[in-house]
Amino acid sequence: MFENKPELTLEEAKKALDLAAEQVERNLAEFTDNCQNHSSVHLKYPKCNNDQWTCGFWPGEVWLAYEHTGKAVFKKAALHMVDSFDYRIRNKIAVDHHDMGFLYTPSCVAAYKLTKDEKAKEAAILAADQLLARFQPKGGFLQAWGSMGEAGNYRYIIDCLLNLPLLYWASEVTGEEKYKETAHKHITTCLKYSVREDGSTYHTFLMDMESGAPIRGETCQGYKDDSFWARGQAWGVYGTAISYTYTKNPEYLDTFRRTAAFYLKRLPDDLVPYWDMIFTEGDEPRDSSSASIVACGFLEAAKYLPKEEAGQYRRLAAQMLKSLVDHYAVTDFEKSNGLVLHGTYAKKSPYNTCTPEGVDECVSWGDYFYMEALTRFVKEWEMYW
Ligand code: GLY
Image: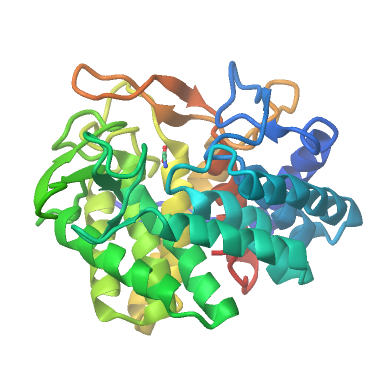
């Protein structure tokens, strides 16, 4: 299936990043004092307050635009946004959930890595502390949603693999082991129960509050409990690759390979998955964000894999990116203020529990990971994660 697919060239990747940075610059006026909503509405992102789990992605795009162009206007805007993230964590605004990594890595860890901004570093460490407070020793996991120990919410979700890098980073900068130890306990539980025999994944996993024993996998945003929510699979692929980078635990690389292999088997012809990979053809919406996330995972894991295998993953990433750049990227800035079309946040099915929103729209993380994947493609990139 993959042999004859065209690959993105270096020149095309640079051009795509030029275009993305141009769009980000156009959006600065509207989104420097305001956050960008999690998804677009009729392809235009509305403004929002800094109170969604997704607010970190837009500043991440601004940092990536800064890296690509070197323009001071991006650095100034992204540093300005650090104030809002600092205020949010100090005042505990909408932080009673596990998404501290999604929020604080592309906004504040990026700011610290690129500029050594101390306020950004302190805010990100506070966010890591907030995430640690979500740890449930009975069962050994970071609780995703709701009040701690709330009935029905004694669960973790596969997405949390992308919150763990904040903990690894916090251990590095503070010298305190507690952050990475908690990450280790969480990922151990997650890989044991959330990854199925065939390499597919459950979105959420419920644990027994009294005994800490596993109960069952359930979906929220996928089609049904035993289907293959595309983004959950993508979080699995990229999350295991990053955890390998930090720990060099071979089990994570093994799980990377298994989740990647399953993902590849369920792709339609243009290499951009349907929102749930139970669908492999037809009119269901796609989730383009999953393709960008997986491309990032392939390019990260390729750094550590044997040469031939690394080459295969790099080639696959180049093929996926070619499809995204040629057929999914926004090229008409009047039509959309986003970067990538055909993302899906949450689609209602007869069997799932999600609130439907952002179906076949631009999604904030889709735009961010598209830029990240292109950046990884054009240079040796020190990751924000
Ligand atoms: N982390 C939630 C999502 O991927 O939609």
